[in-house]
Picture 1 (tube, rainbow, N blue to C red):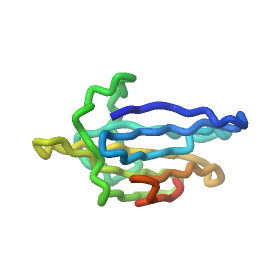
Picture 2: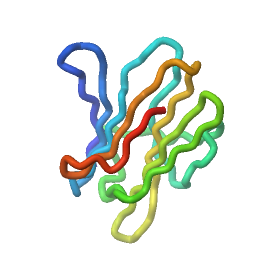
Picture 3: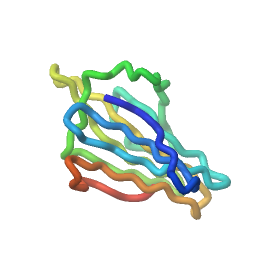
Length: 127
């Protein structure tokens, strides 16, 4: 699994890309716009409340390399102006972990996301 940021060639912003060995990619608009708090984290438990979260640090070398995305799983949760999108990852032992994209904003700035496998969009939305 690889985690990397890509800067748009037009200079307008960034995109976070996370891709697994099965060629499943989760992309997230990583462009900062004024007054929002957004990002991503990994969790060993499935979060359901966007108001409470337990961030786990993300290592550039990604310590969870043996995990792959479950291409049938994505859930969104909202509470006011706090939103999360949750993606499940599993390993060969069927241990699970969750990628959480979040955006806590003032109601104006949104961040798009998508999950793609082999050029087919499985899920997309905006937080």
